[in-house]
Length: 385
Image (cartoon, one colour):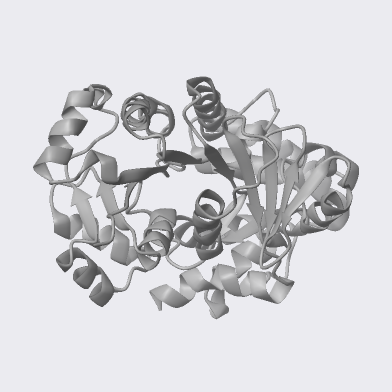
């Protein structure tokens, strides 16, 4: 009889959670998903919303391969007490020794400042309690977390999301519990909901300024490619030059103009550019004025803050943009692979995996062309149709 291997997937009903759950299930794992929901139907609805096949989900639940742990709100201090976790596992008949992986994908991005802080920072106490206990019982346990390039920003005036991500990263490093910390810029693809919903509003506000939309590039990763890399790095790649915790894993498919990303989330009839736009010579002044004025009028509006951030980037010249960029481009990663004095190529295909010889940082590139990147973004709209 094969040994049962269980993944405990925090944030498992979300956009990235759906992809990671499918990847581990495909490779023979059981998946346990703690959720704040109080019944299975609501938890299933979330996974279906993010693209999980309904027939497969019902079958996997029926076969006991995916299990929802209900009423688990990690903000609640009770989850900082290990006895509450042990009672939960006992109630669900989950063997502690079968839990070999914990992946944390929890982290709100678009609600109030307090909600962003709670879901990125306050939840960590309960997670660390659990991980520390499981690692003390089994040395094979691996803990992974999902971060964002937002945590790398050096601006003095950070948004609540950026600040929360930076603080969460500091706490993760200080805990010395995290084995792999995955970082991406923009995660796109099947099942995306938030930015797809926001795209029409963003387009209506930004389309009058060409620089606001098309003045800078962003790094894209397909959510299913991300899930494959998370599985592959933690299960198959073993020859890392350093074992310092956490090992930071930066993942990308390549870059796309910000405006192209937004446009490809829209229905065809909404992609038309207006006839009247801000003149080229006036764009720089308009964007700088927006950066200064808008956040002061609506300091707690997360959308306004994001629009101001996009305006700031669009108004910069190329040199300033490059200084502030917080991700490596596909071309830069390929150049690192040639720098054998400082970097080690762990794999070349299908992923180019390049490890820093002296710092616990690796870069993973699964390069996609521009048209492929647009198709990845379009998957969100196709699924909803």
